[in-house]
Each structure stands twice: as C-alpha cells, then as structure tokens.
Length: 347
Image 1: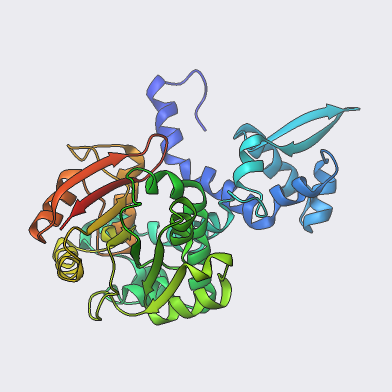
Image 2: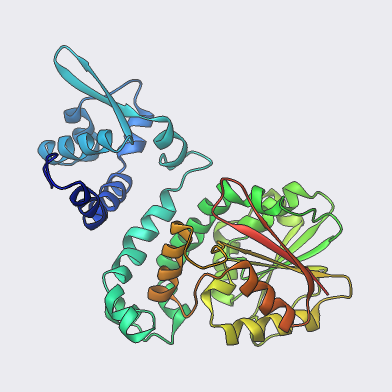
C-alpha cells in the first residue's frame, strides 16, 4: 500500500490495482456467512464469537471483520476494551441472504464464475472472444454450456438474476406503462423473477417465460410461486423455435450476450411474431452516447467480452438494431438510481 505522503496519483493507482482485494473481501465474507451470523445474533458479537459460529480461525476472522469495517460493510463498538461487530444498513439490506433484497447469490456467482474469467481479460482483448476455455476448459462457442456447466451452476445463476430483479425489476418495468399489453412473453426469462415483478405491477397481464429446456425445468423445480397462474413457462430456443404469441416481447439482459448479427436475427424473428401494435421492450445497462461511460456499464461491457459473444450498447445502437428489424418509434428511458434502462419499440 502507498504511503499517505506519496505522490497524489499513486494512491489512485493503488486503489485501482488492488481493487480485486476489495472484491475478494466482499465475496469471502458473503460465502462464509459473516453477515448472516451477525444478523441472527441478539446483539453485536466479538470476533471470537463470530469465528466460533463460522468455524473459522480467530486470527483470520478478526482481520476480515476489521477490513469489512473499513469498507463500511460492518460497524464496530468497543465495550470493556473489546471490539464488537454488527451489520451496517447496507449489509443488512443487501448482504444477509434471508432478506428480500439480498444480493448474496449474485455475489457467489461473481466470485465463482465471473471472477475466474476476468483473470484472462488481457487474453480476451487479444482474441476478441470469451475466456471459458481458459477458465473452465469449455470452448468459447459453447456459451450456454459454459454458463450452465452443472445443475448447481445453473441454479446459482438463476438465483443471482432473482437478486438483480428483486432490486431493479420494478423500476425498469415502470419506465413505460405496460398495461396496454395484456399478453407478454419474457424471452430468456430464466427463473421468471422479472415476469413475477411484471404481474405484480400490472394485474391485468399474463407472462410466458420462454427459455431453453434445462432452465425451464430448473425454474419449475425451484421457483414456483403463487403467481404461477399468471406466469407460465414454455421451453424453446428463441433463435430456432416458434415464439409464443404475445402483445409485448421482453428482452432483459439478453441482447448484450450476442453479436449484432445474432441480435438482428432475433429481433427480426420477434418482429415477425409480434402482433400489429405490439412491441419489444429491451432492458439493458446503457452506455452513454459516446460509449465512454458510465463506468459500471463499461465494466459490464468488458464482462460481456470475457463471458459472452456480446457487449453493452448505447441507446442509438439499440434503436438501430430495432429499426433494422422493422420496429418503429423506439423510446429510451433511463431509470434514476438503477443500473438498467428500458427501450420500448412498436410494430
């Protein structure tokens, strides 16, 4: 670490170069269950008590807890000369796995899959393709095999998307009034998390989640809910199989996986299936017009490089893809405070 008296830019360089350490602290604390143990305790705990509950070393636990305090993931108070630890509002809301807005599963997915791909970012830039072969021994053209390497990996990824939409689903689905679309198809809708947000917001609609057979089968085993009567599942490949009938087709975190050519192919199929007056709703993290921000979306775009065939895009780029497929009047709305924006286009 740099000295406080060092050159002013050196601190920024250290912050960037050692940023992976911060990520690993967050991942490790989540995987070990630090935030869960503190949430379940009747009051703040000392590091020895946390270590005993976790089955971890006293030395390592104390060091991890103190870094979490510096990162404002935990707070501490001293009683009788002993530090006692507790969750902050941030960790209580988003890191305790039992909380409704928890991001626990997404953090585990980032730690176990995404992080390993990012170790090969330089090679991804050299080759221009994802790095599943180097990270996991999976050829780069077997995208879905790579993402869903096992039933456990598939389930974790689906739970991770549940985490995302539990926080951001309502805001992106409220960007436009979707009540004129009573029959909706969520293409690549995974566990149905966004579909359930949709029927909660728009009581008059029904949603069909269309995804590949292993995903639909996992969804039916693990993600059934009281909304099942208004959220249904249909198996299929949206590049090959007939699409379900719908007034509106939702593409949430789908187009960013694919090349422009494949996006055009998919959007053309949607336009052909879409009823006159119907539409397509694209939900993605949107780059600024010049492509040089926001930083989070730029990083997501690099993530598409190391994990998929695609990239994040600007609103103009999405409008161009939609227009080429035959859609008109594409309107873009960013959702304040959220990572994702929405683009609605009509047939």
